Image 1: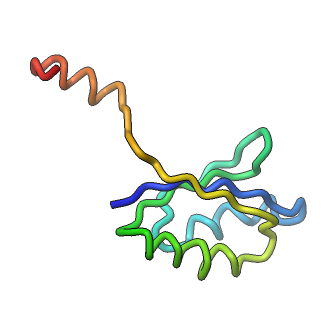
Image 2: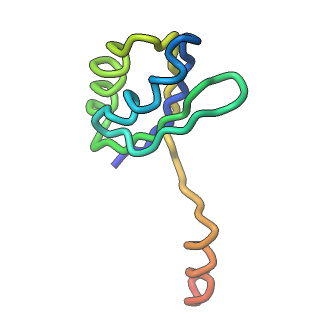
Amino acid sequence: MITAFLLVTAEREALGTLGPRLAACPGVTEVYTTTGEVDFIAKAAVADLEALADLVQDHLALIDGILATSTHLAMRRYNPVELSAAYDLGVD
C-alpha cells in the first residue's frame, strides 16, 4: 500500500466545490482545506505506483478548477498513540 499526499492549488471559483470532487476520486481517503501556498491537501492510499499514476493522470487531471498539483509519497509513518503503545509493551 502506498500513501501519498496531493497538494492542490485551485482556481478561486472552484474553492467552494473542489473538496468533495477530490474526495470522490478513487484512492483518496481524506481531503483538507488549508492555509498557505496550496488550497487543499488530499491523502491517498493506493495499491501501487501505477494506481497513483492513474489517480493523478486519469482523475485529478480531469477535474475543472485545479491549477496545479504536487504529489508527495509517504516514506515512514509516526503515530504518537501507536509509539506509546509499543513502548508500553516493551518493544524498543
